[in-house]
Image (cartoon, rainbow, N blue to C red):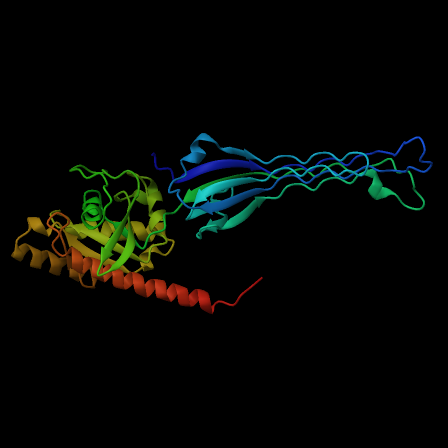
Length: 344
């Protein structure tokens, strides 16, 4: 299945049905009077977060979603039928943006969440509604209200507990494959990962979800490489794991490149709890490990962990540190939500 996390969609709610102009004309009814019914309401356009979807690929083949129009009213005080609603089924974690791609209409973060995107038009009144003591035979009715037509963007941001950061070939996919049942593509050339991958990682009877995204290079925020759009998939993470290739000859420059890119991206990524790990230590001897660890710690200003996705050395310690950050962050978020006052 192709991974698609951004798409443009055109929606239109249904127009209301027209009101009816009608009079009772039965042979033996002397004062029949007006009996035109109202038009039916147009259908609404909704978005709903559903289970079982992890990509927006369905919207690649259908971009137009039009709700049904309401039916016109009829004689004998009959109201027209309402138009059927239409529902856009999206994965949990989808952001719905206005046409400018900046204004957030809704953030679908909970399973079953429903949002009204376009309300259907009201049905027009039939001439029965206009009957008064001074106008007992009105010959007017209202047309139905027009539906709402708009263009929206759907952007999927995967919901994970931990996000992996690093340059291409830093070992992110190898780490995910070594710690979970996920099987991302692993190869010895840059940009092996072209779309995000999710894996469920377990340590000490606790589980959390890890997201692997394509590697960043210098200038990604300006569109170089694969760009930095994939960073949206780690915006919701409770913690970040920054992997630095220990076999690289430009260790400190590699680290600074990633820091500069997440700061340029914004959205609070630079402020998230972050663990820095020196990866691929299976290719280093003890002296090189100690030297590079000291160099990196002097650059970062905080402890650096050692690990290898191939030999699995140090993986358990890294996972335990990540689990601790995830638990603290999620507990803090839950306390903040409970402290917020309820608003209608």
